[in-house]
Length: 148
Image (cartoon, rainbow, N blue to C red; front, side, top):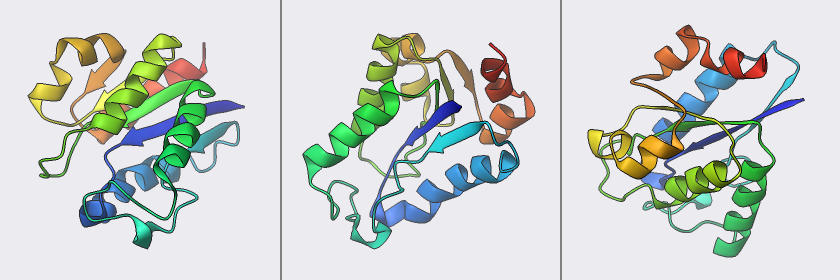
């Protein structure tokens, strides 16, 4: 089974936005049985995620180890670099991208400020970049990596 980790910003203030793009990908591929999507929002009581996204009902080290294991066991990472207008940087997401890079796991990224998608480290970490989630789906980038 092909495993895809859905990385990106998580904030209690923007939980709807943090969930919507992930749900759009899940819905698009819902009939594809040979993909397992790993959503870091699963296993949480979403209401327990703090407004700034830094605490929840799960201890911090539990979140980090769960996400690390999810990333390194994935075949592909799809990441949304958008912070939905909030000032807090994508520290957790960037850590996940570094873990993927170290393991040579390809990354498809979209969205975000130019600061993120043009940063030299992220340019190195990201395999394919497009501006929107529609670009990810319409260009069939996920399918490209599944056909390896």
